Length: 297
Picture (cartoon, rainbow, N blue to C red):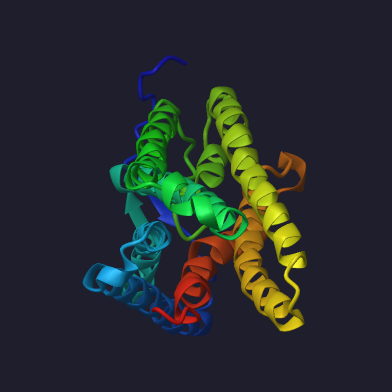
């Protein structure tokens, strides 16, 4: 169809999580609370790391960037959903929808890379403590954050441009609470083959790379923990790692179900619930898992 924008659509309708009035009030209170906790918790972590010179280490540098990504990530989708519920208007402009898609794709992939980077940092710290300062130098730490930021910005721009090239049918209702890529593709009147090819190619490479990094890092970590002579030390280490792995499993498991499931098995309702788990629940849990259980924080 070329790169010309063939659609005359000027707005979409976000159907949200529920159309029942009573459920709307409950959802508004629940998501507002989760949003405020997420933003406040992550911003306080960032301020604590900036204010305390003892926390100016690679681990807390990555944690500060994860907290910033979490705050931006949840702010991409939840405020618009809360606004729609409050004013009882489901409309989102075409430009607003594509903007939301761009920033959502940017921060969701950045979250994945940062989780993988933090796992690698933990691996070096536990398995090679004597070489930690030399390996995790300030230059490498900045590179491990800036490179994914630049790559994900270009990757998100590609998805946005490809989406902008599609034409959309008369039905502009999105069965979701934000402009995600799969619900938008389902509304397209043109063949989204290139869009889907990009999804399965780029995400099919980036996702497994992050997961492989996590698996390798934590495999070596567990093998090192098993060598700890103290039973209490083993239990403490396993407890810390298991809580981290639970958040990682929740984030990657639900996101993989949304983006890599077969079209024949996709369900709008199941996809929306899975999206809530990794777009809202994970950012809420991260401050507790990665920071509030930490003595320094």
